[in-house]
Length: 363
Image (cartoon, rainbow, N blue to C red; front, top):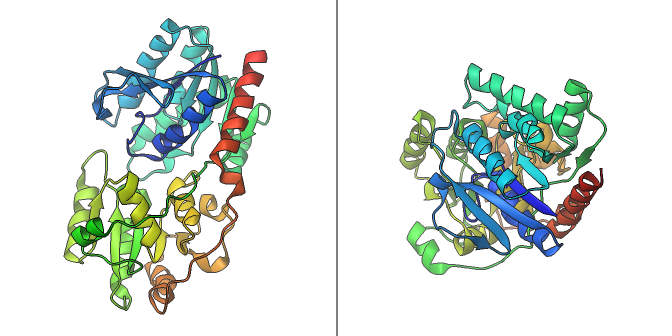
């Protein structure tokens, strides 16, 4: 079975939730017997590779412009997939799903993973939101199978499009934690183990990191620091403003990190905070939970679906409430938490996805 993947910037080590999802999933799909090609956006590729962990990689030129890079990339990826003799095109995210009908016209079966209603993100204007809604509609109408990563999304597409058949709930996953330390890196950042609150995500408006910076400034930090790990794909007024505000407040900015640096930050944090107003099912939150970190997250539906205790949530956008949740976590001794992570196991998720492919191929 030949699978071609589009809708992601690429793998490996490229920032983004969909990118992390694909990086974990598709090497496992290869081990289950599929022939997988990921079509990458050339402008994001740091290292030209023909293959990575058994996944074939093909790079296509795309303009690095957030308004239309995804649709151009998807169009070219579909044409490449046809040349490769693809059986199933796996499209990730609602923007690229706009071209699901085109892929069907080219003779391929389509699996569409809905990672969340991206038109709710603050960064998009009216025209972009309209196109994203159209992409969602095309994906839900024309894909042979739709994968959703949360019950919230499953209910959304049933309500909006009446799609209840050939819809599979397969959660995002998280790998086993790689608990480690990195004293040299911590010295470089000027932080100490369990003496910092970690915020880890992209620097985009809907993540509300500016609320976290403001809330942290209101508490008695007891010597703890705030560390923001991440960056943005497209530097804009928001990201520049956030970095300026954070720097003035003494926040530690790491930039985009992966590997040992990221694992050490997760291993040694006092707690993790995600104050976002929009999520599908946040991989960063699942990662923090896998490292047994206390977490504080906004009470949006996607975060509530994880099923954390009530004291982990605060009303989205309420900076005062966020500060009140953070205050007890920076006082006293660090206390790890235990979470049930079974349904977020990537091996299980890979088997579920492979079953979707087999079902589609059989039809």
